[in-house]
Image (cartoon, rainbow, N blue to C red; front, side, top):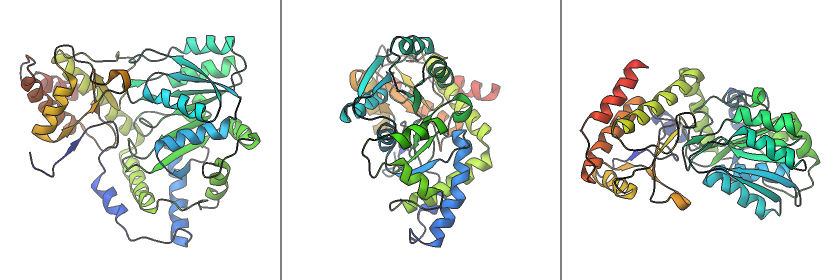
Length: 382
């Protein structure tokens, strides 16, 4: 292994395209000058197709978690009753944010590794008509589950007056997202995953229904007040100092996405998911999620005859390959491979080849090349 060669295949932060790195290295400009105004003007309309919305997609300098907190603090206030659907660690984070703001959060837990059943949400809302907002996660990073957001939205809107707030941090930009058509009221994502940037920006959009609630909400907020971001962004400005280098990079990211085409971006992510899953099936290493619940951006694997942490350690030492471990009660039980953003089928083949050697070194009886061949066949037949 070369000492400065690192293969980053965790579900965020993800590798940065070289052209984006060059864009971020541009000389600094004044954040209140005409150049920044032109940059924001160019970026604004190009974010909307990624969200699948005609609404303004607001850009906040902050991590993905700041976006989740923004969604909470702008739509609810102390004493309000909300439903938090928890399918993993990041659904749990929504609960913790609500608790911090003295919001009465009903927690609906789903077994880790499984997607939420929209019918269960329908029933819960019928039994609890006082619920004002439903918080859920599109891709649950900790388990590699992609929840059926379209069907969840139908359940929420057909059986309640609640808003639907969706954490899309680990998949928006990598999977099809139709905020307006599906009826998502608030959608959040971050810069460091499928959006191919370093951490530091969060993107958030709200429906007309949500804006009425946001305008009337008496909850105190300052930096995370969406009204300030909307009013300033409509004038190609920001209420506070933006992360200008990240905005330079975002401009280039949007160009890369436009050149590839969103449909092709989504197809590439699905192909990488299928290559990864077929490879581990061929190697007889169990997957955590079912086919229908699997996310195109991250795959979770739950070994039975070797330790996940041993494999992670070996591939890191041998190849500089970083894959993620489990979180909370799944720590040490699973490992997770990110295949999102600046990642291609060639990268997946590299990861699978390294993993096969790692499996041998931890004592797993496999036929070398079997997983790689399975991934190759998926690619050839795609």
